[in-house]
Amino acid sequence: MAAFKEGKVLEVTSQDERLVRARVSVAGGEVAAIGYPPHVARLSVGDRVVLNVTGIELELGTGGTGFILWNLDAPPPDDDLDGHIVKLRYTPWQVNVTSVEAQESGHHELMVAAGSLKGTPVVACSLHSQVPAAAAGIRAARPDARIGYLMTDGAALPLAFSDLVRAMTEARLIDITCTAGHAFGGDLEAVNVFSGLAALATVAGCDAIVAAMGPGVVGTGTALGFTGMEQGQITDATIALGGVAVAALRISFHDERERHKGVSHHSITALSVAARERCVVAVPKLRPAEARAVKEQLDGSDVCRKHDVVVADGRPGVRWLLDHDLVPTSMGRSMTDAPELWLAAAAAGAIATQPPEGHG
Image 1: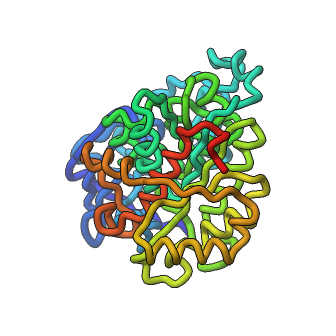
Image 2: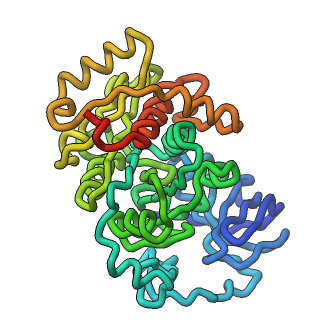
């Protein structure tokens, strides 16, 4: 069951057309809260609001954040959206968007004919936190590339929730975003991953695409029950549309959980079970002992048999991030503390800038 609380706004810390952050007093204390303007009227200090505090009650990775459902002291937001495609369908928070494929979209005619990526490279990441490194790997190798980010609906649904996307946009690391499925809030909206990839390649004219879920992946400690399984589906979609698919491995030598040491079982399962088409799997240059451990894991799985494993240098991409003060974190560890996760993504980005015939 969901958990709800009523509270009063103590401070509005930031507010724009996509996201509002506030401090809210509730029974038992004070919480940080987030609201989305498509759903919530503009906030003022003293407003009474209703919060969903399920994540807080469950002590999930939302950082103790409540989500504002309703402002009891202000009229509902104006509905100035004219799209007829509904996201979050059949929930109290459903919102209509102008999907890039829809008849009312100015891009509809382009999307009618958009059946191929025509060789556009797509980097499929294992985690949202890898997206900046994948894009930086592309940017470092090809500074003039137009880079798009496709956010799937595998984790957080509002793109505005991602501080990383905001930082990447401000740093001009990514040029355009697209939210697919029930994810919403991108520069472009798409019905699914296939059309989202096609839109970024055809409508947005991207030279390369990074595709991944938003923040907040799900893991269950089981073989199949995790968000990262979508990585294999993204690589298959890319290949089906005539693109070049590059998979970024989830690698850690600092995670105490055995199933995530070295190459995570999430990566191995996604690429062995979910991915049915042959793609490029990027392996970063690592220290000798780490490189041997990664090679042994991949050799002992179906990844090497099913895919083309390519070693590349992820350091230029990581340096690009550091030079631009972008230091993503994952599971409480930063890129400077445990660089291998981001070296892997940056290596995938570097490989994506190479012509397809270089992937052997």
